[in-house]
Length: 488
Image (tube, rainbow, N blue to C red):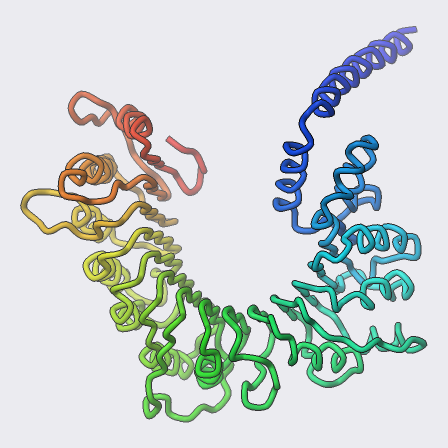
């Protein structure tokens, strides 16, 4: 009897919760269609794909959020059908697709209408089986509708075998703007690869390229001249220069070097001017050997970026000072720098802090500076940087446009004195800076292994109270300990 009583109580609680949710649903149904449509679009924009068939989805019933929305009511169904963009993004794992998935794939492709597609075709290299040919064919035959296409771990020979009884249709990419290929080298080794490649080389709107291997601009046929974003993994310095020379419209470049192939002497080459490049991301952690290190420094000396606005670096080697000539050349335009480094084992922290100092001294338009160090930075160098950014009557104003400053380090312990000087700097740029036309520092963060706040005060206010006062003035200030992950 006790069990029966427990079950009845649980049933009663469940019915009450269902009733509450039904009342919420009634309110949602009364919303104006314009607001509901806007909510649906926000949900779509915040999701990677409206349909995802992969092992990361535990059941096929939750593979499509848009199908779930369309089943709430006939009114919601009509609204979802009136927004073809909600149905247009599909991700499939070729080893996960089954015959029964054909229906939901067809529903998405059909309801997307003429809206360009965003497709991701991948292969789970951990758990793999041959795909359902019929279900996958529905997607492959509609590749020409793609605006964005990503292939991940795809083996063209496997797809050749899957489609050996079918004739691949003539393919073109009239809408394609973004292509990604994080696969083993497709090259020209399969029929499927050649089918994709021929269409890619003639894609009139292609502007973004992500590949796992280098394609020579002189021989590959790719329309490098129209690309604005290039992300190619594992290139030699000479290959990087070849890509940059061929992409006259380049706005964003990701460099993840290096291969240790024999290279000609870079110092004998002429500088390359990237007149439209606005963003460059460099990740060289763990890649460089001695020879590549020297070549990378030569590469930095050859790149000229007069329009550069954003620089992101993740670096172990070479010395951070190798980057300064490149930064100095772009000093009139650089607005944002993100620096991730390790100064403990591979170079002295003084070099890193010298670069930090040079950055705030030489970049008048700097708006955001975020520095994350995995090593040990001498705290006197950090304190020097904070004092340089503090506005006083006895020193020139540096980085007058700076609005975001994050300083983080995984090893050091920050004392109360450092904490107070950090707050002094923020307050000086908030109050005194206003008089001399300096931007307010609205987002400031200090993150170290340990941060002392103690009972220190300034003008009768504790550290916590000063942070609260800044928050009321629209300044977000955070003091965070790396290990405890707790904010003050």
